[in-house]
Image (cartoon, rainbow, N blue to C red):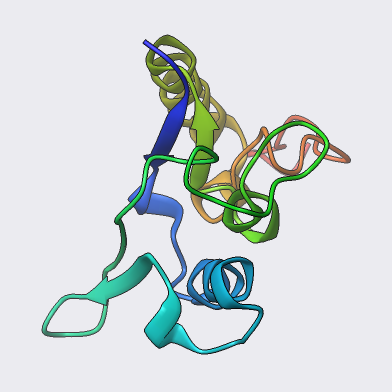
Length: 125
């Protein structure tokens, strides 16, 4: 099976960058009506979930040099990932392990911003 878009919704902040850049990739216009991504919120507005209506660069006219769709490149937290299923599974494990060590990984993905993070000093030592 080939690459496709995966969503790590627990680190989505609801910024809607993916929506805007998807629309720009599709129609060269920053208009969410053209986007194949929608960021849905729960009734309380506390939970954000990107809903993606495509599988990746086969449909996306705008990809970077690594072959990632523009929405993945522009996602500030790393909650959108264009990869194979096994790699997505490994990234989810990496995220959960990293979250136990570094609290900032509750908001961002370690594969998006791998440095300058260091081990979190929990005891103030």
